[in-house]
Length: 305
Ligand SMILES: Nc1ncnc2c1ncn2[C@@H]1O[C@H](COP(=O)(O)OP(=O)(O)OP(=O)(O)O)[C@@H](O)[C@H]1O
Image 1 (cartoon, rainbow, N blue to C red):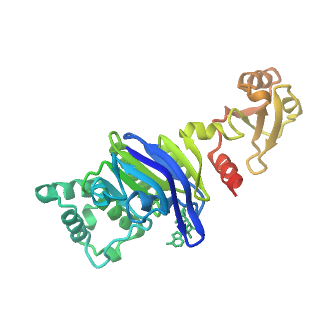
Image 2: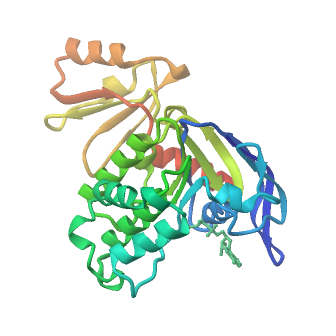
Image 3: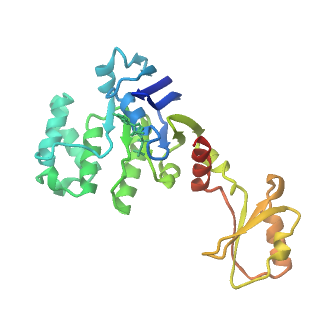
């Protein structure tokens, strides 16, 4: 378990992480979300023992990082921002180097084979890291993070720079890893949180603004329970938008979709659907919204500003 209490980091007079407190249990896949400069990487660096907090406490599996840093680091796999590596080594040399540092001993070859397969580096083993594409560099970074099969994985923007297929693979990899592990990722991709994480934490200005499931995050959106309609052709919507159960509406000028917001948070889909049927309105799409993550992200982080 990770237990963080009142964690703070200041650089000179500037507070990058401000009294952050949270706990993470095995099985949790946590997504750190936040605007640029929110303090996500700084928090990860403190969790992994690369930065010393200005104040506050970090305990990992009962050990305090202030006096058991090395023991804690043995339990953690860390992919730093930008996935730094030794550029003049080949991929295979680098993985051997990391495996030796991690003290894998007789398990070394088996673990290297396993991670090479997991992140699909088979064709790159003899390439110098300097000459790899951004996506492959990131895969090397992931391979070194998981090579010792750590109980805790901390991944700073793990899918940054990957193409859509690689993103999908890395997300699957994270999900397959996670049954008994703690995984913390930071990302700017909101959909990644719903695709991969069972918990979302929104950090802005170094403070925690939301901590809950991705579904709970979506429910905070003003679009939660709104009903969106798309018509086959231009249609008079005045009757629909003046229904008593509809508090307000908006029209997306680009797509022509009409979104109806419910009065009193009620479930208006059946009422809207009946109205459309009764009046023979020419619709091609009708659905209730779960909530829009970009909307709630903007709302929570703007409030912080
Ligand atoms: N070593 C440092 N010295 C001074 N300021 C720093 C240092 N490291 C980080 N900061 C500042 O702390 C703030 C938080 O940075 P951090 O990298 O943690 O943000 P982030 O949420 O990871 O951002 P991004 O999404 O852009 O990666 C930023 O304003 C950054 O400029």
